[in-house]
Image 1 (tube, rainbow, N blue to C red):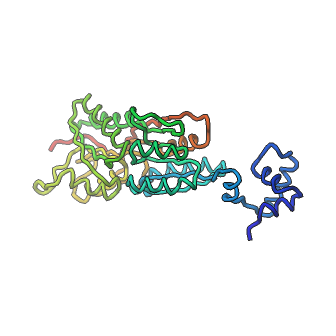
Image 2 (cartoon, rainbow, N blue to C red):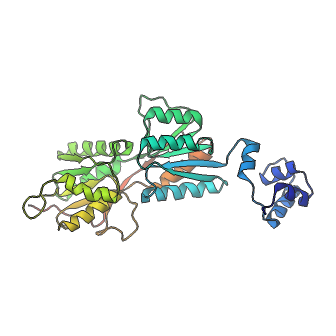
Image 3 (cartoon, rainbow, N blue to C red):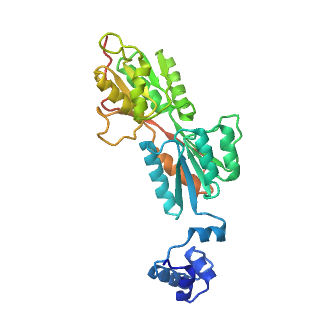
Length: 337
């Protein structure tokens, strides 16, 4: 049977109220008494009840994190950094997966609202109105997302964005330097704010270099979506092999990984025939063959900034993560034909 705070208080020779203040680190308890209570609590293997603390303080001691796809390695790094930081303050994390569905994300917010003190919405697929409504219920941290300029930012909303411009501009210039004179972009889900930022960054840089840009729509930003993207890029076979674009940039590394697999099955060599660039630098070493050139989006930095927004009352209401291109083996010089 679990030890109660009443048993700790009795063993330490103090009132329940004093024991509670000592365990919470309150300065209202003299050091010698606080040390005695902590020692007794340790000896009795006492674990504070989150429910009891919630009833006493009005705080749940939890935050809610809603992800669009919990299987995406990008969010693994994000969540690891976030959880590590808040755990140091004895804050629990409840995780929900919206499966890229705005309506499910909305239901998860409703379900979590009474169980957490703050919501972290990562790459939210909701419209601005729904995000603002959520912040009216409890503090919200938007990670990898920003409200449109015309939408007033509520006082209880903080925004952390990823500046894709440096990384994606570098990706285009890298391909251009290798002799590629046209680029295909495999876009992300229709509700993805970051997907729009990536498409806009590519459009701007391609215009500067006078490179034709073809954007291919896609709804599944995962491995299978990447495999299916090859048929969407070139729906008809031309002769013995598909006439595939020679420079392709993918919405994320998962899509790029699926594309590499499909290209290999179709008999195309990467990077000999086709150059491929992903985004996020989220794949474990050795998973992609050849090693994937990618735009590093620093998911762990994003998670650390989200944690700071949760934990620090004076943290800036907005912050930005920078991106950079990491060149590996999946990009090469353009070939004719």
